[in-house]
Amino acid sequence: MAKITKRLGIDKRGVSWLVEIDRQVPAIPAISFYVWPVNLPSSRRRDDPIARCYTWVESENVAKVHDFVVLKRNLHNRGIGSLLLNFVAQWMQHEGMVRLYGDLVSEDSDHFDMLEHVYKKHGWSFQIYAPEDPRLLKDPNTLGRVEKKLS
Image (cartoon, rainbow, N blue to C red; front, top):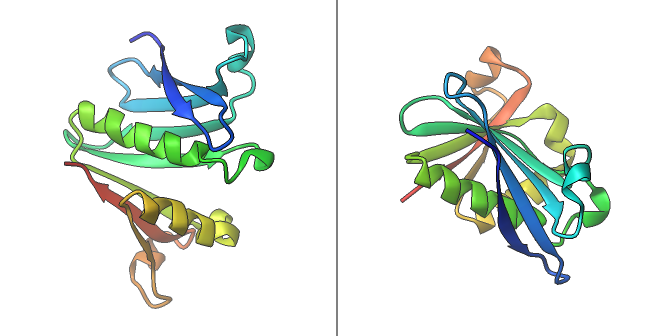
């Protein structure tokens, strides 16, 4: 599948954004989403995305979200992450997914409060595992989970 570019939306400051959807060859169940401002020349987009989200289709109707991030700190709190999170959920629902989930990992623990706000605002559950939770034994780097049921 070729890369598809769509309009993502307009952030809180009135800047328009594009999202590129990059579906790997059908044998690899990965779909990546990259965000750039509309006015950035296409020749420069691949080198410097503003935000990204990687997804992995794990079954016929469940996908895992990996590495959902707005990369430029000076662009935080402008609604770009919200635009991307909503777009990814809509796209994956169109792809036949009924559930999305992602792991909360230790490297992001310094901004769990921001992640909790964004995910909950858009209808995702947000759970930090208790210290005695057996899931921590399986992977001590995974500290919790986010999940959204798609309708």
